[in-house]
Image (cartoon, rainbow, N blue to C red; front, side):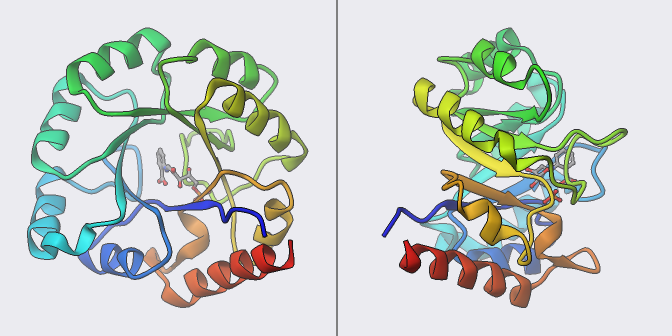
Length: 221
Ligand SMILES: O=C(O)c1ccccc1NCC(=O)[C@H](O)[C@H](O)COP(=O)(O)O
């Protein structure tokens, strides 16, 4: 048996979404704080959900996703919410991440868009980013596009992250019908937003289908 991948369910947009993700096998639960996302939530609404949920979030890591945000905006989210990890999903440089880490004192992940210079870009964050989310580059969207990239490149991303001692989540267009193919690459983590939604809401049955495939793959290897 191989180690099951970590599962990050991203773009939770309501208390109900968060409850569904909490009751799943997700290891990481993502909330998006950029106005550029259709999945954007405000710090204040998220604060009310976590107040209501109390200890129920124990055992899950909460990931705050930001795109080229100001330090003050990130600080505000971290001060009000039980955020464990900050995911920078924009053009943030290695210097930006280093400054952020010093200011916020939380692990910082960097989203890298699949493409020709992606490995080189990963290298520039070595020793700074403790995790990478490899996502599809789509025009006019930083993430959450529901589109996958050419997974032939996945082993190279996993290898570079492992060399750095960083986590590596594969993202972009993963759903119940293609997750098996991705599992053959044995990614450390899988990150999904669109593939677990129906009508913009997290969908328990889609989550269950994906988790069944992950478990079946695990017992077959
Ligand atoms: O999901 C979004 O709307 C989003 C918007 C802007 C920046 C990041 C965003 N999502 C971050 C994630 O980690 C998603 O899970 C990742 O992009 C994969 O999304 P999907 O292709 O929809 O599964």
